[in-house]
Length: 147
Length: 87
Image 1 (cartoon, rainbow over the protein chains, first blue to last red):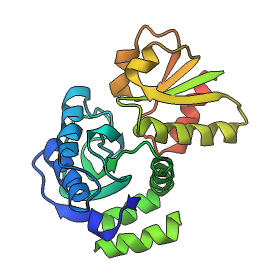
Image 2 (cartoon, chains in turn brown, red; image 1 turned 90 degrees about the horizontal axis):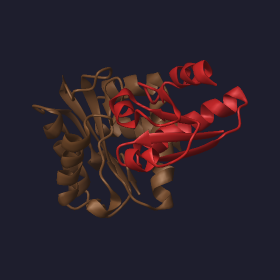
Image 3 (tube, each protein chain N blue to C red; image 1 turned 60 degrees about the horizontal axis):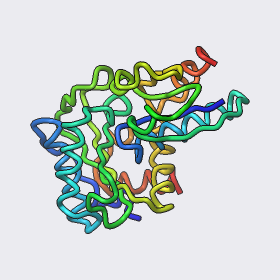
């Protein structure tokens, strides 16, 4: 399981639109060896086909595809956008935090989603993610909250 | 009582919603059979309530279940009040 390790976090990324933001977050999974590059294409295709339903809360998107689309390990990355981007969601646009989810069918998938839900259920944590100066600072937040 | 939480793929976001719906039901002291799945599976599944977001609710019109819409999956208060309205 690779859950928001410093190498899976990129802060203040520039993205022109929703697809570009998804690609940036997906690239972090690929660079960390957690997914094949076709997984990025599958996430973007799912966005184009099914719409922005994965914008789960104000400013927060959780793009993902299926385990068989090239996931090697259960994983979550984070791209924080320098300028929030419109995904086309009626209530939750614009998006500032993009968590790409490397979905797997293992038990780890459930453990990981539980950690992510625990983190994001608390608005103070979301604010800390928006304010964190470095990926390492986010690492410290995670240690304090989800372990 | 059967509740299904629905997302586009049935893998990620519907499971998050399910976790928080289960938290809220426990809080409310309501016992229910909660499951999660994608839109097309949900169309063919019997349920009393379907919980999803506005984006997907339209694809589920015509389902016999009562549709409950949640906009912020991480807002337990919103989930609670949406559920209290229908339960």
